[in-house]
Image (cartoon, rainbow, N blue to C red; front, top):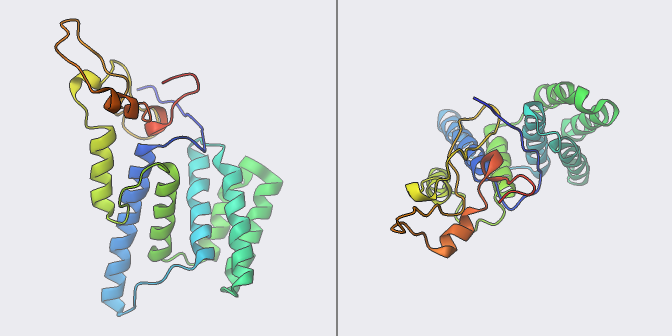
Length: 225
């Protein structure tokens, strides 16, 4: 199976990436709920600097998959985490580890990604509530044009899948699949395929909306519709 990386940080939207992050948020939400029941702790109100650290960690993982553009985005998140932690007098390790990881990346670039992830993962306790919030924010970033309710994680996943991937057969162009490394190929919405008999037609509005889903689970290659 041929897999291709389409590395674009900012696009009209990536439905498959949004599904991935919403599913991760759901898993962390369930874990946070279980911990609160076990230990009697309240669900944490996410501290912004920790959420930014968690988002940096997530995006560095994306770099390892092959999305190089996420590297300097992660550096920016680390800088914001450092500033926020200092401003709000957050736990000392938040600002220190954010700075340490950022400096490693600025010095070593792609080669320092694993080291930076280790600094964050071992130096800062990123409780499930923070990871949940981080994946939620990444889902909103990956599908910025969506105005649906993302807080209902499972419901949002099913809605996105139905809207972008659950298609009438006539709308699935032959050979068109998503090509994100490590994830299953999935048919995506494209311009309608009208059979020669003329019996199959798709509303123009639906077809126009469909062009947002292509490679990288929804990110279109330059020059392709």
